[in-house]
Length: 549
Image (cartoon, rainbow, N blue to C red; front, side, top):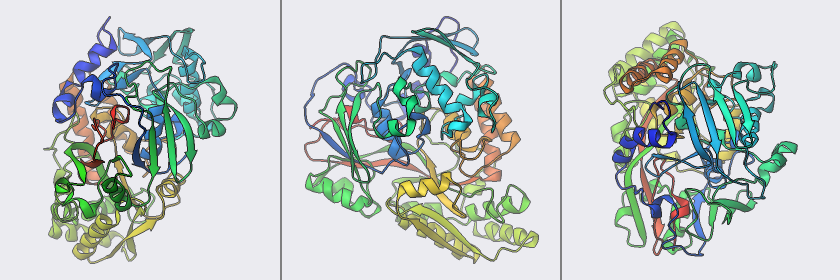
């Protein structure tokens, strides 16, 4: 995607994301599905859906996991918004213009937070500066497109030499400019991600307290957050954006057992379950007590092996062991027996429905089940340094992961003749906290849900070099050749050149394997009888604002 001289962002991005719209069959971009201005079918009924307990207080710059992300995306509106099919529309932005893909001028619409405060240029600039500043320790501080803004190195240093990004300039209440360190044709596409949401003035007086009772500018407001129980959202009467609520609110119920959630849908006590448990995957499409949803999805599943783990560093021994582990996993059998074919074995680090996917990358044989080669590589690694421990894969026990983790561990154990097992951690929140604090001394379940529809989003946030705890690079992987390939892709001015560099970046990953790709996750969901307008977006997330009953 290239924003040409005098071309509005909304038009350019819509063209860029057209392939996403065509790929995601079953997604409607009508106003009823996208939550636009149409109010057809609107009701006052509150819709209930499943979720997990957010890891942290609900601060956009410190939210990079699914439980918190669901809520933040309903409470906030950004400069642009993403339609269910991945196409984009300007939302708070009236326009985003550039002549060189390096400096962007942003003009804002008349907009306000749910407390009545106007959303101004400072609302965005101050929020981005807060997120980027190292002393604030925000999880999205090293989000790759944020790091492209001029002055990032100064504010992100362990001892920052500046408090604000020099590349952000407020012109007036409705106008600000963004200057990058180098031209990027993909930067504007990321501006609907939560790291770029605005914040009201009161957030900066006590950010942690604000995160418990956040004030956003999006389609819903927070009514209550009963930790580990439920999160209640009400329609924002002053919101006039692209995602108007067609219902009377959303109740996100926090489950620690997806089987219990499925039973609640069957009984009519839960309206939407976005992930069917493994126990029901072979029967849910014929279950006449629910409405089944099945379609191609964009979620990528893997497990990460931290670079700090003994015997698994980014060196010859570590690469041999990572490749051996990967080739010891019988993905086709696991996806068939555990998931009843609702998962597709991975052949890359992105997802087939995302622009930039390439299923024929050089080196993707490391993702194929090859027991003899796996044993040979493990023996080569043992010749360098003998491994005599247990290979653990940590996962959150409140999700539906035990069956596949055990199957993966058994495949590794049986192929390589080593001890391998799952390592359950009670809750998703605790699991993520241990990862963020680098307390886990094992491999751990990982994966990715797209922030914006581009291969860049599956690669840079997860594997680009970053200071530990400031990005989604939870394994602390670092390879300058990978970083250069991503930078070259960002600077590319043609789709073919951009694809070439993404392919180069992935081929490096297929050798180093900082994470072990497993499979792509389809949308396998259910809704209760009587629930209407249930659609899923390109992120495999329900379009909550459109659901009625």
